[in-house]
Image 1 (tube, rainbow, N blue to C red):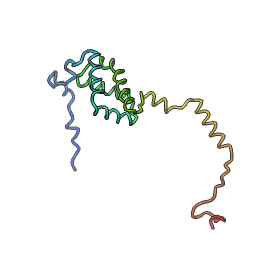
Image 2: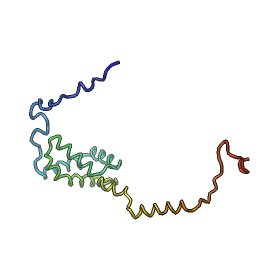
Image 3: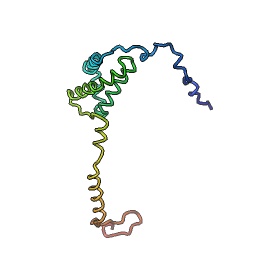
Image 4: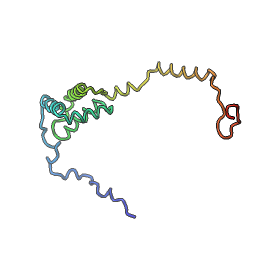
Length: 161
């Protein structure tokens, strides 16, 4: 019986400090430093490529919120050293608008944010009270449907013979 040695192959604490400085994309200066440059970058990336359109539309059709998708795109660019986090935060509404424009151009319905999903799934207290009252009334009224015995050991009735 072989022992699981996967934990032995994991990086040791402090190993990330032994890499050469500047090897990682986030350790270098960003390629885009202004909001205008970042907006042009995302416009060309989102609007200029048909493959990107198809991927975005597929994700939106699954019900993934636009705000979450834009946040993922922005954080990915920060991680790859395209722009800084503060430029990404400032350009985030532009990314959301570009994604919604692509969806509108292709006739795809989309969910703007996770809050919109939660709001659509919630019920108001007034509606909840009405539903509870309706259930109580239906339990108080006797059922008009006669239940007939069923199963192998049930007494035979006229309809069973």
